[in-house]
Image 1 (cartoon, rainbow, N blue to C red):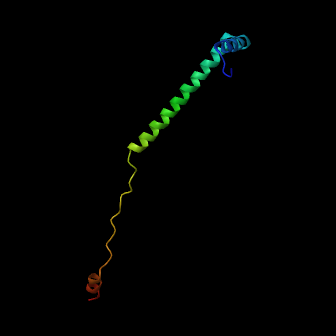
Image 2 (spheres, rainbow, N blue to C red; image 1 turned 180 degrees about the vertical axis):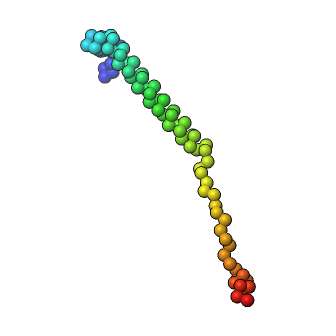
Length: 80
């Protein structure tokens, strides 16, 4: 009683086809399909970008050799 039967859906389909025409419905569905494909391509592109960033190691800054701090024995030797 609360659900639609196949006849209800057929009547709705006929009304839609009459209002929009067969070509217009086909065009809308084609645009819908292109939108889904574009969305999937964008998601794959973003995942590939993340995978590329994860695979390349981060740039490391080379350390510079610093002069070691003078020890107490070095300071004593200089004073003599």
